[in-house]
Structures are given as structure tokens and as C-alpha cells.
Amino acid sequence: MTAVLVVEDSRFIRTTMKQVLVEAGFDVIDVSDGEEALRLARNGGPDLIILDMLLPKMSGEIVLRSLKQDPTAKNIPVIVVSSLPQSNAEKLKSEGAIVYIEKSKLDLMTGGEKLLSLVNAVLRTSKPKV
Image (tube, helix red, strand yellow):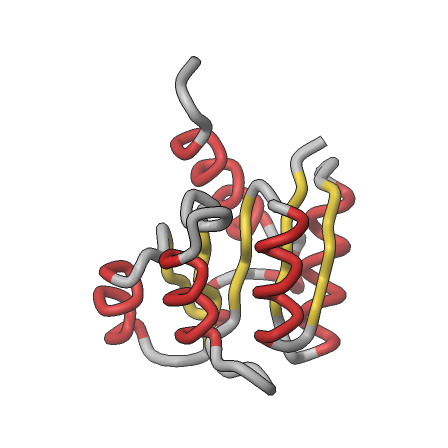
């Protein structure tokens, strides 16, 4: 089963994302702060990380940068989900994010199809070729 780590400080958004992903057949681990996210990513090796930028203890930007510098976690694809404006997208992609999407565009209240579409697309393109 594909493991997804959801890192989001809003309990409502985190729970909703988790529900959408679990119903789609993913194994989901969810955390609310950057430090815990980094620890789990380094130890548990999820297949994908969905990362908010505005987090307690350690910002999402620092988490992203730390992940991409860590040999055990650098290949985990990261989808950045944030309320920050789209103008941050290129900077975050240059730091290692695969996709950047504003929370308002996720359609979580109407089934989360956009979220699922992004997750599936990223997983398809990031799977190692055998």
C-alpha cells in the first residue's frame, strides 16, 4: 500500500485530506508540525509527502530544504499545499517540491478529486523505473 505523509497544522484540513486519501486506498500518516514530519520522513520513508508551509516548530520551507539535503529522504516526492500565493511556486519547486497548489484550489469539500489527481500524477511520474 502506498504511504502518504500529510503535514498540515489545521486539524480540519489535515483530517479531511486524510479521509479523502484513505478512502482512495492510501495508507496515511498525518502530523501537525515540521519537526515530526522530518523525523517520520527520515525514519518511515513515506512514498509521498503533502507539506503545508506555515507550520509550528519548523516551517515547511525548512522541512523541504532539509528533506532534499538528506540522503535517506531526498527522493521522496513532495507536494506543497499552502495558503501562500502562487508566486511562491517557482522558488519552492527550485528547492525540491514537485507540485505547488494553493489550498483553496484543492476542492476538499467536494470530494478532493483535485488532491487525488495530483497525488496519483506525482506517484506515477516519480516511481523508479525497473
